[in-house]
Each structure stands twice: as C-alpha cells, then as structure tokens.
Image (cartoon, rainbow, N blue to C red; front, side, top):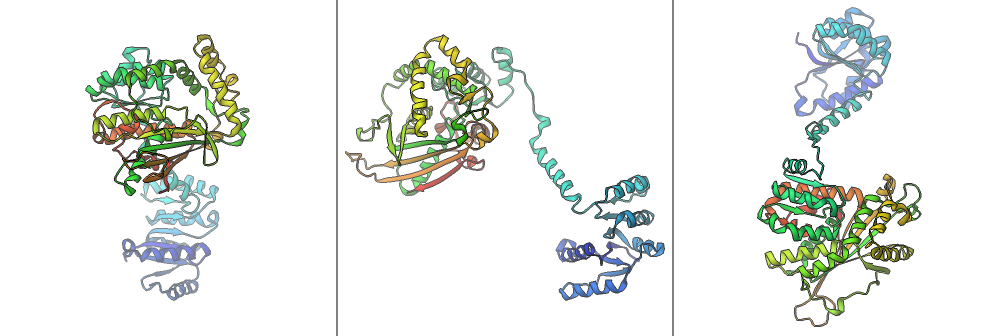
Length: 530
C-alpha cells in the first residue's frame, strides 16, 4: 500500500481540528492538490463526524483517509506511523504522549513534526532520540507552532536580509589625511569617496586634490561656504579635465534645497512651458520644547558642527571678496520690488536670511547650467525663522562672534568651550536620539514667473507654484541619508551627470533620479498650491 504524504494524529482535538481545516484549504491550492493525506485519532466515530463537518463546508473529503489510532496501543500506533511519510502530531500533553510516537516514527522511517512548547519534553526527545533518528535518516522536528516557527522564520528572514549588507566584505583602510601616501592609497581604492571629516577648511583640500589625482569621484557634508568656494576656484578645471565629479555640501546643506528646487522645476513644467524667474525658500526648524532649555542631552547640535561654523566666521570676509572677484556680475539683476529687508513678515511669522550656504550654492549651480546649457537662471533666495525669543538669543551673539573671530585667541575659546558660548545648545556629547528624532524641518519653496515684458514685479506673477520638502532629524539622519544617496546617484547614474568638475548639488544631480531616491528614505516632497 502506498504511503500517504501527511497524516494528522489527534485530528479531533481542538488544535487538531484547526490543523485539519487549514490542511483542507491548502490542498485546494494548485501546488498542493496532489498531496495525499489522512486523519487519525482514538475514536473513529469522532473522525467521521469531523469529515462530515468538512463536507458541510463544501470541502472535498472523499480522498481523505481515516485511521483509528490509540497511542497507548502499540500495534495501532505502528500501523498509523507506517502509513505516512510525515506524521503531524497534534496530541498532547506531549510530555505524556510524545515519546512513544517519536520512537514509532523512527522505527517506521517516518518524518515527524509537532506543536509542542514543552521545553523539558523537547529536550528529552533530543537526548533520547537524536542519534537513532540521525542513523535512520528520519527528521524529528518538534515545536512547529507558535513556539517557535515565527521566531525561527524571523531569524531566517533576518539572515537573508543581512547577507545583502555584506558586512564581511567591508574593507578597512587606515588613512591619516596628513599622510600623503596613506591618503592617496585610500582615494585610489574606491570609485567614490564619501568625506565625513571636518572642519573641511582644514582637512578638505588635500582630500579633493588626492581624489582628482586618483580619478575618484567625491562627495562631502561641508556647509563651510568659504572652503566650498575655494575648492571650486582651485580644483574645478583639474576635476573637469580629469572627468572627476567633486560634489561638496551633500548633507542638510544643501541637498534638501537642491532637491526641492529640482522637484519644483519638474512640477512647474506641468503648469507652464517656462521655468520660474524667482524661487523663495522658507526654511523652518521645529525643535522639541524640552530643547528650549538645553539641559543634559537636550542640546541641538554636536560641537563638531560648531567648529566648522567658527571656521566659516573666520574666512567669511575673504570669501565675500573672492566671490566678487570671481563673479563680478550678479547672476540675475533683482527687481527692486522683490528685495526684502533683513527681517520681513511672511505667513504671519518673522523671517530673516538663512545663514546656511544653500543660496550661494544654488547660485553657483545656476551659473553652471546657464553657461553649459544656456538655461535661464533662477533667482533663488532662502530665509529661515525661529521662535521669537531666539531672534535675540542667536542673532546679536553671532554678529559679535563674527567680528571677534578675526582674533585667533577668541576662535580657540569658541572651539574649546562650545557649551559656554552657545548657552548649551551645542555640546561635545551632542543631542540625544530622542531630541534628534523629534526635531523636524520644512522647506516651503514658491516659484514665480512673469511675462518678459513686465515692468513692475509687484503685479501678480503669470505662474506661481508652491512645494514643500520635509523630514526629521535634519542634522544627522537627514545629512547621512542625503550623503549616501548622493554617492549612490553618482555610482548608478553618472551617465546622466556632467563628466567632471567641482559642481554644486543642484547642477550635478539635476537630470538624475535624486528626488525619487530621497522620497524612499523619509524625505517628503509635496505640491502645496498651484
């Protein structure tokens, strides 16, 4: 007699009944239709009743085999285990009824599964039967129910997903930036270098030059506009000739604003054949209230960012002179009607010029695309706001620090005591995970275009569109995510990008899928008004 594929022992019990019903459903699926199975239990009458219940549910039961089996009857038990390839044991408690079934399965060369969660019984089954089962090529697999299939399957899934990370293939390279040999070795070992060192005004230039020499693309998280501008002046031609992409400021500064501008331009095409003349970007941070009084780890920023800011304050006067020398003519002559005072009101709040490098970097991007592609440049302006009392807490001290940072002794004091000079908002410990994840950012960007013959820009624009870019943990998660996505974009879409040069993000990535990739990683883009 040919063996059944499956036999459910204890089919009339509470769990056995559920098991049989699921098995009948499964046997209707195409890949399981040829599986033969049966039910076994002490009472043949109860087994017949179970089949009748299944028939009333319009389930085909004509091929289901019934086998009477009292586990305490060795002959009936051996007959049952000998009639199937795999026995599904739904009896219990298994500490009383399991051992004899397992031994019978080993004798009849029948694989075995059960739903036991009785750890002592499972351990005894292992100790008493593992060697015999192994010699007989019989699989005895207990605990195939809630304990412990979900956890076992979860572990298998995790392991499979973990393989994709391939941590075993991560290469460790020692590199002291001040050691030219080590630096050249590091940049020569990769296609794209992701520079997370800082301050960039001290450490950036050597890394960029090494990348150009070894034909290695480069991204960083710098927000130090003097250093970025120097990198452009000193290295653009060499990078362009070497077909090497040097793309600075791929973190919070300035990927959200660059990607937001790309998104706005694409959406603008839906309502107009033209591109915006002016884009105003309103940058807003929403910080947790407990960070208003930065006690403990309720600070906002790590001191490393503060040190970079000190370098910016030191070099800013030189940068302003260099910018005038490099770009003597403004990109766009701004109509007087569009000019803003230092403080201005918008949407019921007070705004002032955003101190980040985004506006300057977008301008440099617009100069590039205007020269290379003869595209009409966009006048991009960025503003930010903070809770009202922060105006007095931030702006006056920053002006004072700006002038005093010309003295080396004061810069050293700023770097040595960040907590003191920032009233605790920047510390060497950095913000806690909770504070970081509760800090949100929003960029609201409005693009406007006018007819070319308009004389007065106070009149309503021909077209206007507002979009919003938002996310969480701007200083750390967003910065890290933007940096990695930027590098991946170069790796995968370099054919859509310029061949080389020191390029700002809005120019480097304008024809890529950067926006779509950022959307997949907690950066939201939406159209607000048309």
